[in-house]
Image (cartoon, rainbow, N blue to C red; front, top):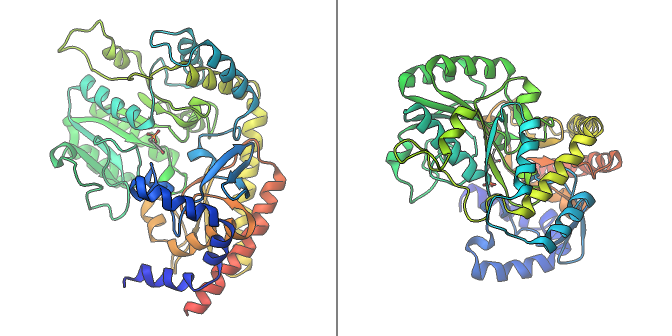
Length: 459
Ligand SMILES: Cc1ncc(COP(=O)(O)O)c(C=O)c1O
């Protein structure tokens, strides 16, 4: 038995896991059905957690209901995509109308132009936009555009950076970083992807210079989602931008999480740094599938179908690109965000700051050292190990006590009906209220006691 199993054996003897099983027995039964016809019972690996995931049936506002009829306050918010909560009224109204007017028109639509015009208005680097259906596609296209534009091969990415499941960037996303992420990937393709540590300016500059004249692009999330929405140092971003430009490569911000989240114009607005290209997804679709690659006109123009073979960069969208449902949902959402900009982002930032600070204090008060990371409405609580003070990159997050973290999030679910996807960055939405945050803080103190008791028992 490995250590992990011993730990689970320990938990399984009772306590939180029993309470979770008691509360969610229906999910347990339904998940068995899922396992019979779906690998691991899921369609996205991160949705699985021990002992089994909640099976959800409905969402509204700040809440998620499971098959047992339990109502959870939801801080996962559909992979952080739902900034106004589940099914906000303006989005529902727009989608309802579009359902009658055609779900998929398969040609140029007014709806897609209207969405893209808004993106160009709100996102600083977006002179042009190509839409697709997922974030993974968008980052894959951004890399191809950069390689096509520069005529170079190498892309530099950050350790712990998650850009989706495509072959293009699926490297050093999860610890241990020196192992291939997946079978079935051709090593040669990843030979042209180099990795650096987030916020490590010296190391990053060294690798960029090594790559030198073969640098197509540096791609990074300015707020590193996989480490708990850890922000880059502004000086780091600035220096990286200057070096990438000096070497003749392109800077790509993956803003699939941070776009419309940390500010209406995304992290590029928040940091005041304009990349050459950026990718968007999640929030942009108003709760429906979407991905987007945006940026400089001279780069995006390469995707134009009037370019001859040999002069063009072929990138999708695909069959459902620019589908009218995602378009009108995204348009209604962006319109709401733009009209209520100060109020939405002010309130989200206040709730996020309060949550991060108060959760850490509540845990410290019960004898558990923790650090909640995040920017604005994003947050993840890490349980520090001896000698650890800060979480500045994915290595730090991986080194923290992941088992305590899992127990904490399971206790929030089992004892307080508060749902975060254990171990993953959560998101406060505009549907949450300061009262929800107070309830989260109080629940954190109790969940902290569960962690403390478990640690004491383990010795
Ligand atoms: C930063 C980032 N990039 C890309 C992706 C991939 O997006 P999608 O899951 O829509 O393919 C994600 C998804 O979580 C992400 O967080």
